[in-house]
Structure formats: structure tokens, C-alpha cells
Image (cartoon, rainbow over all chains, first blue to last red; front, side, top):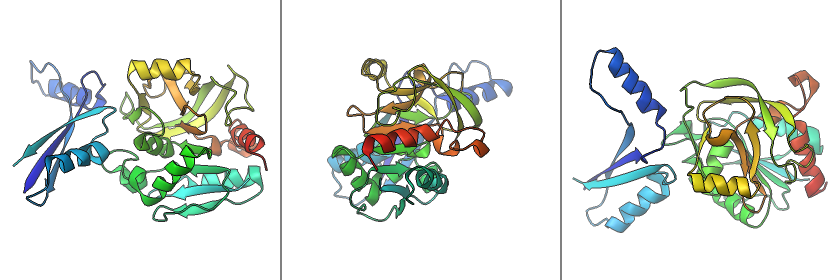
Length: 76
Length: 222
């Protein structure tokens, strides 16, 4: 079973990379982009009986740093 | 004082730390590989070096913080052994949770590599007793991810408890409240982005970093 973990910076945490991308989009002439936030996508291939709790623990203990990041789990 | 330097794949300041520790303590530190699960007995200091452990994969310090030897480092820290993390070592310590906050990409996105002025904020810790509170010292930095971040409640607590050890006296990387180094609540764990081990003798352009190791030696005892 494939599981997708999306890791994003918490609202309010400065994202210098997002800011740089935002600026570059402006430089390419794209108007109307209000803001850009970057993040990470981690795809896991896990056993079908892997519990939500186990996946959540993987996120909390390694995949995301919950001091600065939020995560979202999508089962595919 | 017996010391140990933890060596991860991708560490590149481990030798600098070893040279500094030997110069100050008179004894070469034990170099402990990340795959080990036990530390030597009777350590007066465990040092985590700068570098790019595990290629900075996932997040700086994230993989190193979950390595077998770091579990032993966390246990030793909880028993009161002094632990010192420089640069990537600081990132590892925040990833373990021994120190609060996180180190993010520098605000201006640049790799900063130069001498910077630091203000000594707390001169009473085991690591900083040879400095004067409010003193300005010069120590080199070399990092891409040194932008210290924590919520304002945590920052207030750190300041209130005297746990900000060093602050940048100039703009360096966008760190919250210009924080360059923090202590844990018990005062036996220090993490900092600047490299005191690169400033221990006149040939380095000064010895402002040497007093950190000397102070620790004095506190812990020979």
C-alpha cells in the first residue's frame, strides 16, 4: 500500500525558499501570485495492515519536525 | 577530563574539535563512530561536530539524531554529562529534543562563512564561565541552516531562564532574537552555530573559542 506524507511548514514560520520561488515567479512575469510556501512529499510503500497509529508515529518521530512543520497523511 | 567526539558519515569538523579538546585537556578524545551503541565510561564531555551528517537528508541533523550512538548521548545528557553540539551538532541536538527550537535555512538563503561578533549572554554556565557577561567575542560561522526558530513562548522562556548562551551582535542568518547558542534547562547541554574550536590559538586569528573548553575543563575537573 502506498502512503503519501505531505510535510509543510507551520503557518507563520518563515519560508525563505518559498519567498525565493515567489520572487522568481514574479521575475518570469506571473502576476497575481500572493504567496508561495514550499514543503516535502514522502511516499511510503508499506504493508497493507500498517495502522494509522504506526504511520502517525513515523511522521512524528522522523518524517516531520513538529517544532516547525505540520504533516498530512494520504493513503493512496 | 575524558572527552569523546561523535563522528557521523558527513561530519567534517570532528578533527577540529579533537585538536581543540586535546590542546585544552592534554588528552586526545575518543572518536566514536555513529554506528556504536555505547559510549566510553567516565566522560566529562561529549561533543557533536559540525558538518553535513548523512548529507543533510530529510532535515539537517534529522537522521543523525536517530542513530544508535545518539540514543546513548541522550541518555548520558539526561544523567548530567556535559554535551556540546557545534553547527551540525547543534542541529542534531534540536532534532533529538534535548534542546528546544529548530534551525532553518538562513533567511537570505546564503551560506554564511565568516567571523562574526557574539555577545556572551550567560557567563555562569559550565561552558561559559571563562567569559564575562555582556562581553563581545569573535568566532567564525560556516553554515547554510543556522536560522534559529522557536515559538515566542519558548523564546521568552529561554530568555527568562538565562538559557540564551550567545547572541549574534550583528545580522548573520535571521535567527529569532539573534540567538546563536542555547542551553538546556539543566545547563549541561549547549548547542551553538559558531565554531569555537576554530578559534583556539593565535594562528587562528584569536583564541576567543579556547575559553569555552577551558571553562568546561575547570568546571568538570581534570
